[in-house]
Image (cartoon, rainbow, N blue to C red; front, side, top):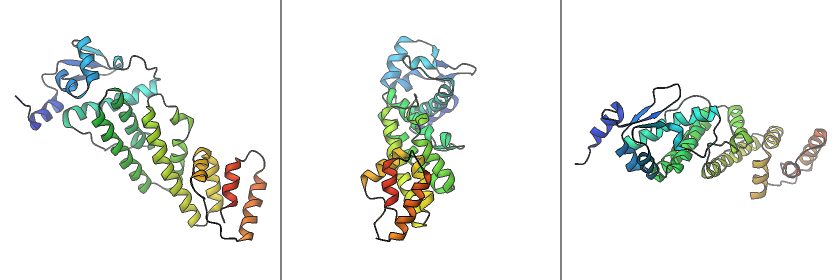
Length: 250
């Protein structure tokens, strides 16, 4: 007999008749239905063949070496994964800083990939892009620039919880945001701010410069000389790519 959507919602909400518990250190654990999770993920299906009634949540990831902060984030993302199994979706209602509001969706995407749930991978991708756009439209330029700088930092790019796909998606979306911010600064005549922003994110700046001319050349020698003087004052250590870009800011 096919389960109705209404009854599935009831099972997901109340977890009545649950037959398995994922234990969580310091918490009550997650009561689930093996049949429902196994129907959505072959990884869950194989896992339940080896574990009858309960297991630690992180036994799902036996080869991973997560720090405590990442483990805490994974516990939260697993709630989204369980919701998807029962309801076919999870709600994009996360609040808080950029990590929770935006980057958390990439962690859910990464876990979905590990669990072999392609539908959830796509669902999380959509949520990530929507959250990124929402953050961009509701934050100050300073907040946006700090977030974009973080996207290209080693802290994020080397995050153990992220899959390679998640990293690629992050860099693609963040690069578009970076290019848009540089464009806005240029249009507002804030060339020094554009240079500072590019200098803070050299990886994205190098990609931007290699993809297309950063600024159209208008043959205004006085502006070029001003940019070159600014570069000279900054002294040693400037990235060669950034120097070329700034020389074309006129």
